[in-house]
Image (cartoon, rainbow, N blue to C red; front, side):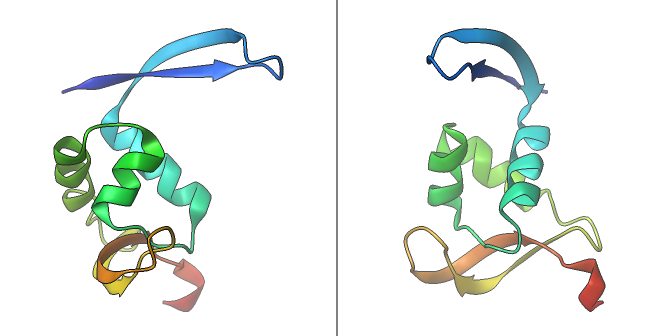
Length: 93
């Protein structure tokens, strides 16, 4: 399992904490934070600052029932209509 370095900075832009998190956790946490927005794979990779192919594979694997959905839709960043991933709003189920 690949882990990616995540760095948190203080308001003066000086790093004060660094740790490694699995890419799946990084992507799913980000999607939860931006919900209900949907992102295409290239924009999601750019947003989490990781390479496209691992983010694509991770996003494809987030199809856990009731949590994330892949569908045809409009990307929040590039505004293109294509396959996007988003967090499922459980209140609408």
